[in-house]
Length: 245
Image 1: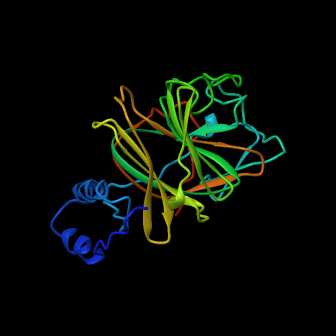
Image 2: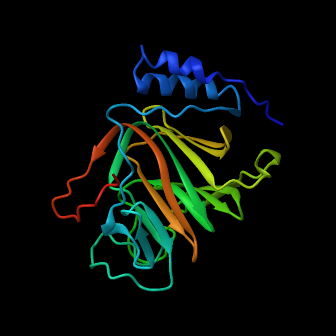
């Protein structure tokens, strides 16, 4: 199995005084590639921001709570207004910020969820493969089920991520995307460790939008984000969201 690395938290803390958070995070993640399991110190830069749900994309059976931070698949139809960007077949949503740089975030989840990134031009209407996260060439997705990450999906191709390293229950996963380098990595978060699950290597031709798909009774909540290099969409015609304090 993978070796657990003894990465020093203090070395990161000291370095943070003389290096930008973005450079520090990148250096750490390069180091991570040599060890599937390691200690993690989360670094927030002065220009970091939170993943914010685009309420105009949310399926009407996905309920928002916690200042629009948490999403839960419920039985009751929510009273969202009609919008051309609203998913009406797949139980999904997108965040409103397009990522173009190096970005890291963590998600807590319950039930069965699909933690994803997607181009904005994914299909909105119906439940065809063109709309579902991971089942087209517009999106990439990690399925989490029964207390552990299960499989990754892209363009109707799936690959299991189950292994001895993911046998214990963990309801938090981490996502790291390096858009210029064309890499998207998923990790299982267990206590203070990251365990590598899968890395996609490709060429990203458009900004990437974090997204979530949920089965009935499932929920997810982004809990930590460091975003470096983002594209803020024009929100003139969109509902403004209340950011958590």
